[in-house]
Length: 222
Length: 255
Image 1 (cartoon, rainbow over the protein chains, first blue to last red):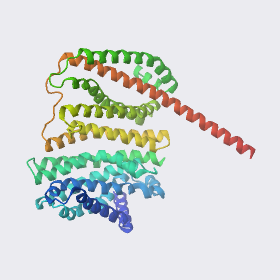
Image 2: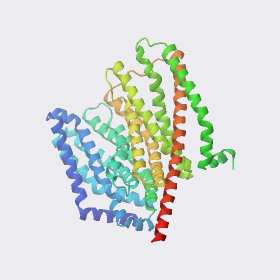
Image 3: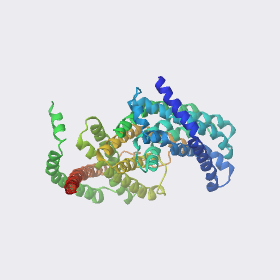
Image 4: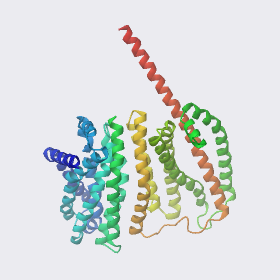
């Protein structure tokens, strides 16, 4: 357990001191959310109606942008092989690195979402759902992203390939995240059913994705 | 060792597989041709026209088999991927790799024939119906698999990476299907003509089943041929590599 925690702490320290990844993801998120109204028109009623979708899709894209860094640097300088030789099983290594990604990217994006929601005229009663659903859904995004990053490790055009591999797998998270928000904004469907399914997806992903990611890592480390 | 295991292991030898494939292929091709001719004849000349849909109902006879093969293709990949990951079965790897483009083609054909059918029936080429959307997402999964195969140079590594992705995908497909169903019922309550509304009359059902059998055979003919080609391609690659190695060795000796 201490190895697991220290790996998370190390990754967080690296992310904090490099700084680039967090601010790039946040900047990307802001730009995507800001550019969509330019294409859709400034009608605030329309924007309020589609705000949940815009915020979620932009969040997926912003997270996707940073996800291939999960293993990349450690693989490049050989740290990943040392970690793999260490006491921690690769499944937990993948889980630790995905958790660190969630804390360093997922949480900042979640916290930035309400500010961006102001730009889109999201109804006030939906703000807490926005934060709640995103806080629940982003772990699934990080863990699936870690799987994609492990599969495309060491490939030249990993970033684009990663989007093709992972975005279809993100659809359930997107659908239930937006459904839970729409349930609060427009009704009539109950909020809790969508939200609980979102929780189930996240929990299942957090358990299963590290296993697949570890299999992919083993493949790429040999 | 049971008999089934024996056959399974014997097939691991590519040469034996090649022999078996060349014995089966002519028969299977013949069967496909007969079924296809019979199915097309029945579908176009015998099956009655729908009183609502007129001629366009004929599209169903190819559209439904394509959609069915789209799903079967992915099942073939998933099963072969399990075989290649657990038993390191070399032909399973070849089977999974070659099934992907064929399955992707059938998925695309199902989408295209579906939208051509949708235009006269629903008045639009595309609706975000739950079924259409999940087939579209299945097509994206196929594309991802093929892209991963192309991106990794070393065939054995590419095969195993793609096998992991295929298995993850097969776990995800039911969830994606479920979530898309949920999504659609939330946004637009069923406004779409459902194929399975009225029970299908046997005059349409029998040609449809024959067409489905014909296209299933066609899938396996194409798949066997593609597997054969893939085995030959790997052999050529191996031969070339030995030639390059030999040339390198003689040059090294001269220098």
